[in-house]
Length: 467
Image (cartoon, rainbow, N blue to C red; front, side):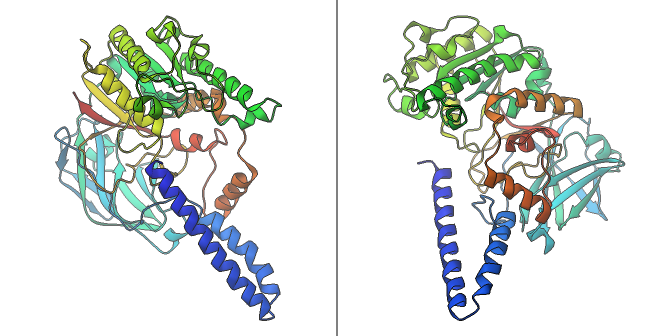
């Protein structure tokens, strides 16, 4: 069981115990003759829970975020006076800029998400944090270097205060879009969620998807399909998406590849590299049906076996063929999804023993261990750095600003992904309605799925390491 699953299991157990204690208290009140009180309080308590206490937050909002940025990133002096941010650093305007500062929620910030507004004249960005936040946080100022140098960048806390002396971290610009890029996507839509803006603007980009993502196909079972049939249909659709959607961004079909391995089976494959790991739900042990849209053959097409050794052979063939200068893949510690962890491990293992070596790693996090809402806030907002409570590794932040037309194109690409199209369950829609009117959270204008809110933003955020 992954760490995130363990945390979620503990969270649900504690919640059930709390609800049981509350019910017992209400029963006692009812016996005491206040029989009407439980009938009044139950819907109010449930509504308050859904509005303010339903987030999966597995750390204290009072903890400091911790980061080590490494040698590529330098610190510069900064000051904040009457909301005006100033620095003596010489900025070209295209650097990745991160401001470390203490954020302390006010009492309203325990019920409405606290946020920091970044103001440059009429241009406004906002970056949101956990309710009750009280610790060091890291704002993303990328794209605002010109305003900062000109002395016109203002910061304003909403439902929070900014305390202490800020620290400005600067990572020099590197023109990533002029170099060959290969995006490694564990599932169809991971490349678009993390890096659509990057790969859509690159001179040469490859998109390589490792799994068909065939499981959890209940939406297709509602159409009258048996479980295995629904899983196979979902896998075929997502395989098609992984090839077709990058065309929206101008990536030719000849540089889009679907490897067709089975969802959530990469850890099993890694544990026994020469043993096939069949699909959990599709009643399949042959990956070739999900590879039928590929523009060229790959080593595993010979036997179609879902093994770790076949995955490594496919990746080595692609790396030697494409010769990417930049590899974009899941982060090894921030992103806890089992397939994402294995995707990163597989690429690094495949690089061993081949002649071509990339020069740069860019890592992304589409999921987090401890906070399911990150990036917090609304569609179109900036992306502050995510919660990290121990800085074991040094990575340089690398942020790409996205203008509004690119954000809209990214939203349309996500809308083409079949896995993001089914409607949310009724309970989730009701929860969002309560959060909208009680906690001030706004729905995304682009779609109902939570990833439209999380991914269509002012920034794409990566962690960079030179090899």
